[in-house]
Image 1 (tube, rainbow, N blue to C red):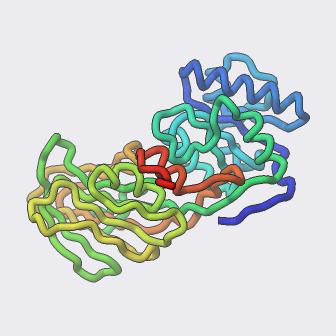
Image 2 (spheres, rainbow, N blue to C red):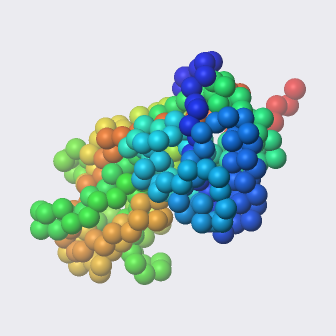
Amino acid sequence: MTTTTHPAFRRIALLGKVNHEATRATLLKLEQTLLNMGYEVIVEARTAEQLKSTQAQILPLHRIGESADIAVVVGGDGNMLGAARVLCEADIAVIGVNRGNLGFLTDLDPDHVIEQLKAVLEGNYQTERRFLLQAEVFHCGKSKSVGRAINEVVLHSDKVAHMIEFEVYVNDEFVYSQRSDGLIISTPTGSTAYSLSGGGPILTPGLDAITMVPMFPHTLSSRPIVVDGHSVIRLRAAADNDSLQLSCDGHVRMTVQPGDDVVIQQHPHRLRLVHPQDHSYYRVLRNKLGWGSRLF
């Protein structure tokens, strides 16, 4: 993580959770304040529909990266994930205002957002690169669908509490065959999300590593494995499975037929995530997970 202390941002894009009143109020406050301060403000098209009236330029999400220096995402981690999957390709800085529940990725407090964001825009911030995963499904050797995830890729059944069978390879080396409810393949960013609830380890964001976490495995000796971040993971669905699902961040879903291969590896572009200068990852963990404070 790098700390900078020089002005960097003049063109600010605003994105937010659609049809959420508290988010709408924060977005309106940000828009008006930033315009009054002389910044160039761009509002994402769906967000503009929510605001109903805006004095800023309006652009679709896929064009935000061409015109803005930094994107401010107002909402929860889900909103940040959706924006990150698109904005990572443009190398635009991204920061979040927490209007969700946990908020591992959204740092700014909506009650103090102007002061905190002003400091960031003036050059007092930390920046880090978070890698994404790319998942590609192959049927009879031919690519049929591709998705990306900043948190995790999950192979699972399309039925509730249904065991599936598959093989796992890392860099073309056979690891194991497994019968379970599925497998969570997670980035360090996603290690505090679905992977954590499945018993996976917490990985600090700077690690170049990927975790594979079995979901309710039939064999009790099945345990999470951490592999090098540049590994190529291949999953092969057993021939006697029903149709399976591959989920990226719980949003993008792809069908996996019996015998299909799923190839998962780092996406070529990284998310440029910005934090306030006093950001502490361990403080976030303490606050969000209810860990104890200092004894003395």
